[in-house]
Length: 310
Image 1 (tube, one colour):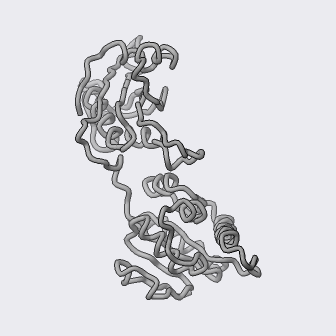
Image 2 (cartoon, one colour; image 1 turned 120 degrees about the vertical axis):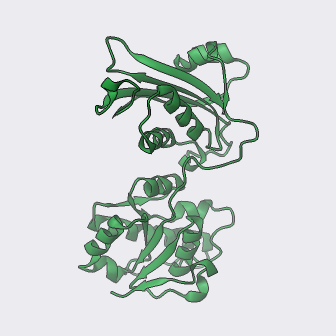
Image 3 (cartoon, one colour; image 1 turned 90 degrees about the horizontal axis):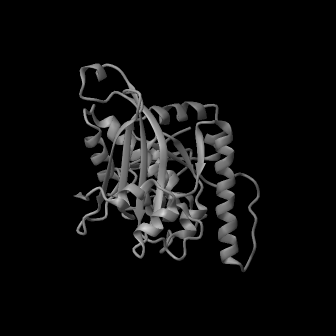
């Protein structure tokens, strides 16, 4: 990443937005920040810092590309705050470091892999190394030729599609136990519940939304059986769950309705809908429990489907 001299704009990176605006006009950019994020970790070059942990505090400000005009309060269209904290946690977990400077560089590098990130200000301070606060502060700018990449590789999940019989089964807890222990993260999918379907003839778009909501209603039923299951609807939440060992239950309305091309299948065809979702999530495998998949609805890459009998 290109280094920048520590000038007034860096000094003002953590100041009040009004001061930053005055200092950087007319080239003012949108910013997001994570402030006073404190973690306890082993770090430092001195012998006294080995074998013990100490508190270090992060303040990070990221200049981002302008938000789309059709933001519509959609978390998937912004650089989420958890991407910043994940960059910090990811670098701290890689290896023990001696220098705050090295850590700051690596955190900035990770953040600038995000497509929306333009410039990162990273301040890291040691809180337990004397009467004062010791720290470093850097500013890094994304190179103009940097390709679009994700902050961190998101694991390829297993999509586990449960029938209503599976949801009601005494073995449900066992399956979720297996999902929790699996080396790959697992996303749960469901179909319609057993209640009579609501039908509105001659209103295809309305019917589509009703069908999607019926699937989501069943997702909440599944989540009520086990507190480890978290119903999520956005791609940002799904990606976060994959990186943080969360068992997510897919609520399909948002991804289906926001998709540019759409699934290309009826949302009432649950195996085909799940196959589309698996492709969107770059899934490694689909597992149907108590549900007969329609093989011709599954993409070739998912030809080897695992079927688990109740």
